[in-house]
Image 1: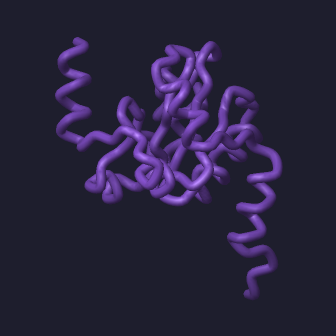
Image 2 (image 1 turned 90 degrees about the horizontal axis):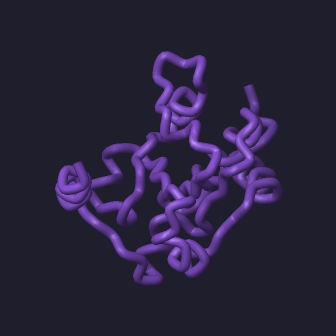
Length: 140
């Protein structure tokens, strides 16, 4: 069966309808309690580190974690006072994910242009998984 719409077209369509932030725009909001940065990359990609303070929500589970009717629902996503800013490796999966969440009814979702690669390139703060776990334990 031939592919009638490729990934490039899907990503282009998503980029046209989702809010996209540049790395500097997200950096300016990192300490804003109304922002939750969400890493949608595969767990194997996290060995390279992640954005400081990011919540890991793998792309493959995201819709299930967002839907209150799902047995996998995560209450963090029910917080309508937050804006969820997604990122992936290059900004393609996060655009598709943000579009999917918008289709589910979320309006408080956006993504980072260029993803983690652009974040690192522009000097955005990162942390290892061990550092993230230690930081979270210290808040408890």
